[in-house]
Length: 413
Image (cartoon, rainbow, N blue to C red):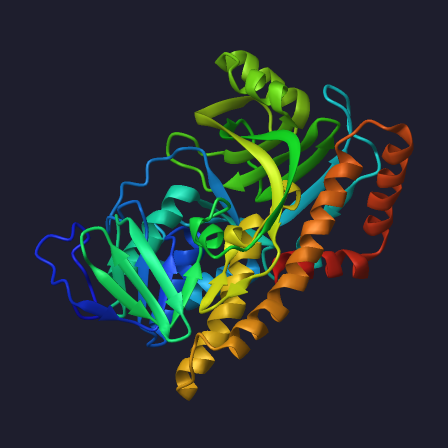
């Protein structure tokens, strides 16, 4: 088998080895985007995943969406993915941050990021299924990408290189292995890299809502004692012209109870948290419940191996930065690997791996600490902390330069 396209079923494929520069384990948004970005610059890439990756999927609406920061959007553009999205993502141009209790009016001390705080949208809301369609289409369109999916593989790494062998005898040889296989990364575990985990005792409810009034590309982040409640604007459909995503954190038992409520009761609970700003609210599609936790790997590298995305770190979704943090890994790693490719250097050299860890891990750890502190500060009903955070919100609101600094960091630019 030579480098280039493979038959994903393995049928009729030669058992010779595919020689590539980089092998990526995991075809989620982080791993697939990295592959697309590298392949566009002439880097030979193999992508391995346990699930099939059909070139076309029907993007059925399922209520899940990603908040894509400005820096992440540029990455997706550079990787050739953005143009393959089957729906136009919705820009986020206004963000209202409030604090309060369920069923009560929010504190009068609020914070609003508006169009005056940035010369471009703060981010874009893209449906999760639509991004998957775009990634798969881009992967299949690249002659520099070899796909092993679905495939169960074993990996051997040593100073000389990496050998990845599938159960059906397909073989890939590479000079660097990228573990992008999620929080429960088997690749990371097999490399003996320790992980520190931090459970929150919270679960996130993810769903979509149709609403009476237009959102005008505005988002809401409402902090409540049980956890943050976020409404994020989405592109409407013919059936639901005014549509938003909801990411709603509660204590574990409460989250499961709320997610299981009948339709009308669930809509009432939504209105109790977000108020009347969007009028009547109708839940749309499926409700998803995810346990919330944070974790970080003690290091990002081993012999001819780097970790990226959730395999390296997982944070609380309170700031909507989880996927964007993974995309920042991709930006840093792709820059280093493209530069090495252009210079004819070894992409798996210890020096390059050390530069990647030095560039990403300290910044990621700061985000880990910040999101953890935000959750502890806001997800409670302590009157002293309530006053402190309301004063903090009001202080940021009063200083445009401070607001713009917050925006620039969150946008990843």
